[in-house]
Image (cartoon, rainbow, N blue to C red; front, side, top):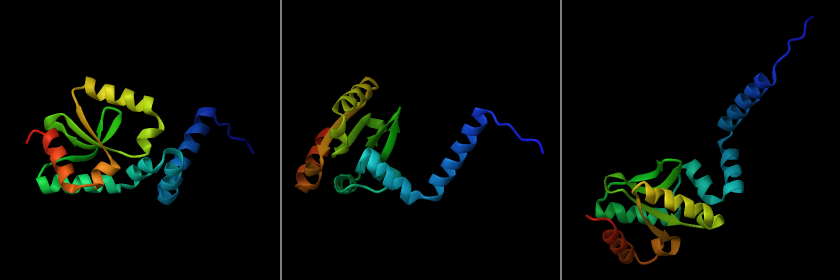
Length: 143
């Protein structure tokens, strides 16, 4: 009986395929791991849910009749609410944004270099007074 000999790259490819299949078959584990590693924001992105702050911003945008893209990719970054025609972004900054302020600064500078303006709102600002939120959005986005 002859033994089949696999190269290390073949072994890595097989393991990688098996791991991808396992994560596909176990989405609840993928979400738990993302939560453990990256905090609630990353887990939320993978599950497609909105935080309370994002839901409040979304309700205000809908009330104003403003079209937006949710969790839109710009380069290597994902932004909460994008308005491509206006080169504008609204971010709801939760705990995830405080983990690595230097990375957030690099991200912000890159987006600005690409012509994007950003309105940062904390969760408290987003879920606080509704009319104040609406006024901040109106001031930021030229309607």
